[in-house]
Image 1: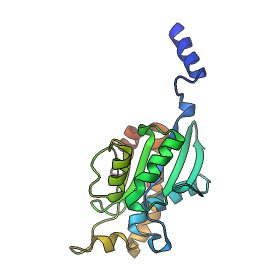
Image 2: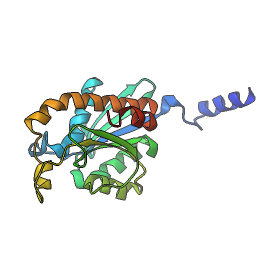
Image 3: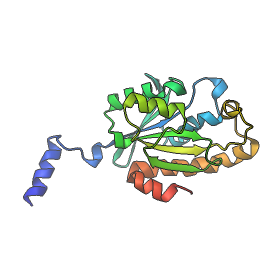
Image 4: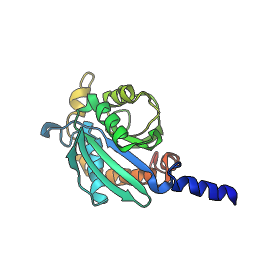
Length: 208
């Protein structure tokens, strides 16, 4: 009884974060500019646009990117589409983590992945950048790779040496027809991460 009262007092005094105060940062990676709109490499932007629409919020241009904010039950969610270009994504992520006082375990980054079939998603806590320049720059600037990431498969149907052209092109007609359903599943996974944490999201959405 005394311990319960003591913990409640600590929360009231601001010495311990409650669930109500929890804030999360969801980052979708991509490149700004009309020439990159809708490309495979910009799938992070595409997914965040869908998540924002499903949450009835709009993006506003702020420092280092477009930002949207909303409350999801007892969580505060910040969505970020960096305007720093892919290779400098870490500048935006570091700035917004500091500005919004985001704990590392409450950061999730969405990236495209050529190692996965189109539309497949893989969520994990930490790991290598897998050659993805956006992840690499984030790791360098925040000083750790122990942040959550959601990889969205874009396939690898390209000849040797054509990777750059492939990821900077738009999905095929068949892939475009799959995209709405796969985007919906991905936004469900993001909600799961926000509400129940990464382990729940991994268990319920990896391979789905």
